[in-house]
Image 1 (cartoon, helix red, strand yellow):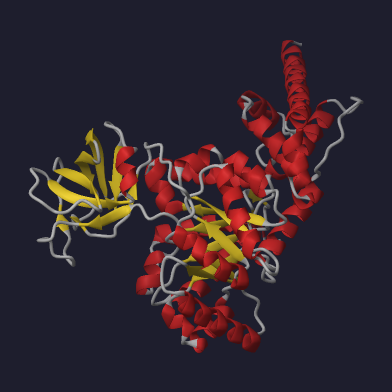
Image 2: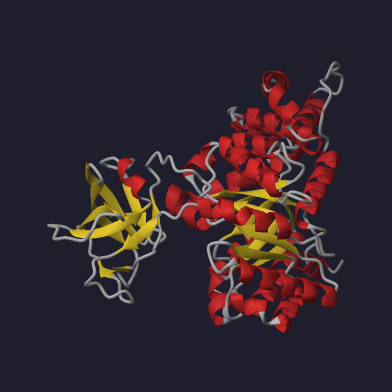
Length: 496
């Protein structure tokens, strides 16, 4: 009797919590009605579901989850794409006689339809196996080697990436012309994605006596003097390096961290004096401790006020509007940034405007992700790229696994396609052999709609390997939901 009373109390308590959660979801719809109304018709249901999911994830429900798991009911762990529907299904099991339930705007079936439609509109039809798309970064060689591009298409490439930080519009046009000829010959579909370079925060120059190929030797506790690029070289009491854009020196503050060369060198700002900053090296994570010119700088603690679109980016937008299906937006931080790019694209789009891909690579983009998604949903089609290289430096490598999953969850709640990027099968691409950790990382990319590979000597082999990994993975997993395909190991034992 005691056990029954406790169980009845638990049922009642959980039922009340889920009812309250539903009420909060309905209230969020009313509070943020303007955001839903501003969304493109393609995304209005998705915007509502995103609100529901944000309500769920802002609530402490771990005890509810434990209880549901204990009694064998469907938990809320896989409800990203259809949040209120999942909550209501659980309520229905708890109390089949309850009436007056709110209308559910997005069912499990409708969520699947929206996810597929948004993915196809952005990236094209998925391969017959329904595995994620494979994006490959092009280089100048591919502009002149049609056979290689044909092999890449046959191996499984379905999106070609052109990085506007490299080469010229003339070379980009050669790449696209060669790709179109290869598409015509092979009959394979392939979208064109072009990455805006964005502002280059980097080491502009080193002292004149430093050999360019070797770089500046660094050691822990060494101090450096960061200077603006327009300041001429003279005698300093601390090793100088020149950085760009110079205005970052007016934004850094003592105590903030600064990283060089993809996080290989970690430093701390010790002193800021007008247009210079003194920093001290705190950690070196490379066997070759030499800092070279043109290496990137990350300032995760600094409130950077730098326009995400550079004059060079704006000059490239007419070409992108003419040739690209998608445009990657680097350095995006807040919703107003999306409006800025959208305005520029609409000035030059003579056909369908390229879909914006928000590259999530800054801490501020993580913090503003729901607002960025709401802003992106004002377009007919858009997507998100998890740019894990810069993102890892910005948030700390130890947090990357957690944060990249959060991006996947929230993007799925908005039914927004995700591109999984940065150093996927990188060793294999360069050497022809993959590491164990790379294979696992590539398989994790199966939860996205597209996985990006960089250029490399063994790119065709790497595409084929990734294709195999993803085909195996999608047989087991749909996004983050395990679908329990029959296992050969089990069948072999049971002889069924």
